[in-house]
Image 1 (tube, rainbow over the protein chains, first blue to last red):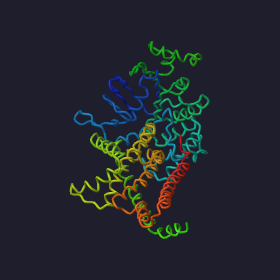
Image 2: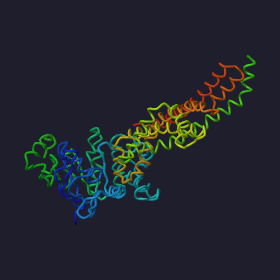
Image 3: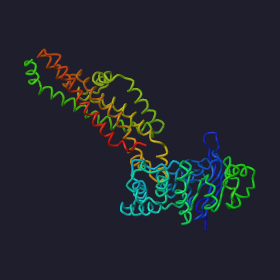
Image 4: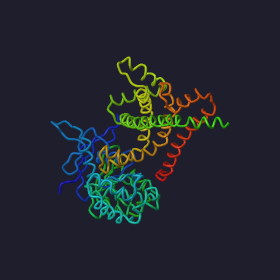
Length: 259
Length: 219
């Protein structure tokens, strides 16, 4: 099966600072890829590029067969129109560290927004889909609540429901448990594990090493804007080949004491 | 004292006609100024380089000019450019130009105060620019715009009294006319001040009520 996400030689600069320096990565359908690395290594920027939230200076990103954010005319890159880019973003789901629910909408409206206004579903159908997902993330009784009435863990589960309800080809998770109190992290990871088992293609930036080890099919270690190691969790996390990864993992020694 | 009350009663229809003119002018200016200000505010944020600079020049220039100068300019200077406006047209135009500049800045500030994360989340859902603005940004931003917008409305009601200088018989000039033939000064000035206060107090209280109504959406 061809890869569902293909990134080739991606370069991204903020002014003179080159954050991504030639990233190539292919993700197969149903694969769960964990991106690990120190902050500033470019993980978040990579996710944002995949969802066309950032432009990029060089390289290509394909979702399926489609080039993200640009089209090529006679070898020249041309930025796609706003509406085309929006349609591409609808094919990719994204969950943010700070949840970013829409505070003026109920939980249900947060989830139906894209279904109604992007996928043009009838409101009744959209609500059925949204309710099914909210039930699956354990929030069926909160559909009429507003985000501020929910805990961080609940808000993040709504954010996940909002993204997966659109049936995205790829789900992007950007340190989604980093802002949560420790006792709320588990409920969010459980939902993500459930998604991973259901065959959802996922690209997950996470510092939750136990989750990475148990759920990811593949671990990619980034440092300084390049991919340093890429392989099975059992190999990459347990037998790092590079000094950089060893140094990074040593910070999680407590976690791997049991490995 | 009975004489004063009698004179007030006699003058009341005249004063009410003046009040009606004041309210009409204020309403027209507020609606037109808000519409123009909204568009200019969007240009300040999302316009191309040229339109953005033009909008910025307009807002900064107008905000730096006393509104009375604008009013006189519209009434006395525009005819020199071949554009003759009636006192009412000139006055309403000047106040609208003035109000729009202030409201543009309110719109810009309100939208700008919504965290970029909201716009990112709306993009991630797949909404287009106008959908993001209409469904996600503006519903939140308008609540933040409301208090300064009410200030602008109150300034417009008060500023409309300047149009009496063009001979428009608003509440102020109606009162001055009454004073002119009754020679009762203080009671009529007090009465007029009270009426302006009641109008503006009602506006600001309505807004405060709306604000409380939406207070639960703070985050």
